[in-house]
Length: 397
Image 1 (cartoon, rainbow, N blue to C red):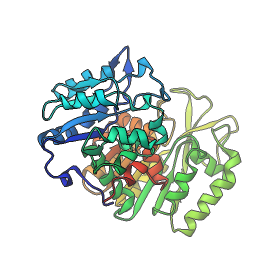
Image 2 (image 1 turned 60 degrees about the horizontal axis):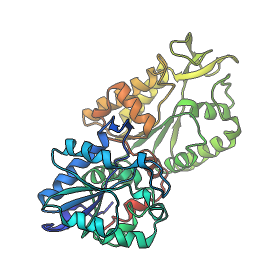
Image 3 (image 1 turned 30 degrees about the horizontal axis):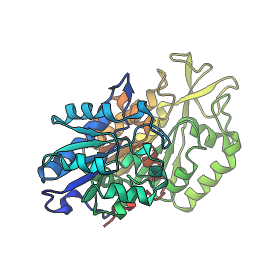
Image 4 (image 1 turned 180 degrees about the vertical axis):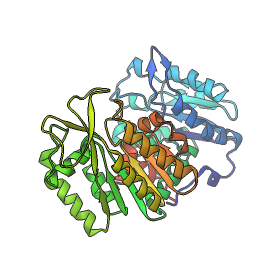
């Protein structure tokens, strides 16, 4: 993936960089409760400042749908980011117009200013060219550091890149390099692990992956749908019986492309969906009508870790069971620890992403040992589905 980086921008002395960041952070009573996304922007901002640029930050917050919503103002985030950055961050109550231009002009060299929520303008989400030209007139170059919003063709995520010299920020750069290692130009064999509740939410993802990877392990409630499609009884488990034909179609595409599908070979079942519910481990043909499958069994974990030993690259999205309930987190935690150990030892490039996945890896205490963990959510899933990402395509050299 050949894209332009800040290092390609040359001398930025006296220039203004418009930087799209993801500051859509959790808030409670006007206070930021998790500053992870703020911290991820620091490297890009500091890199631009050390090269002499003024930095004007563009971001959205919530879904104001083109209206000014006081509770969705970015004003409180300016102070929170200043603490993280260790430097003053100004704020201006709009993202376009002469008063915004004047506020940027008043900045000292290497100054930082946060502009108001881009989604207060209806044209942001429609990609309106007039709004884009107005915002573009505020700066000399555009830097996108928000991979999480790269699947949207909004003014601040893609259209500005058509009007200004455009570069990937440091966080975006790390994300794109990691994704390229995972599916762009991976070292083979490639193993994908896909879990979660429903096949219906990941049909495009599964159909794309079986044409890209050598092995696909399916877990969680999704696996029940595949097992049922193969004629196995799944009791009262979460299962989309109406997608049996879809499951069989995905298996057929996998076979055509030489992709081996790995399904659970033993199961942990219980009669109640509750933490520490009475449970047992059983074979595929031994699920009672009043039982539900809540986790994969130890033989399945052993088979999955054996697959990791043959793989050079791992792409992971979704848990293997009801990991939010003990002890039905066992398979997810064991497999995550196995993958992390191999990645830490340099035997495996392990890339993971998606909300539940990040939570599961943090729960297992191994997120830091993976090669890369994406927090991008929707953009990560669309990338796994093989769909174009407008915010990424706009940065291609």
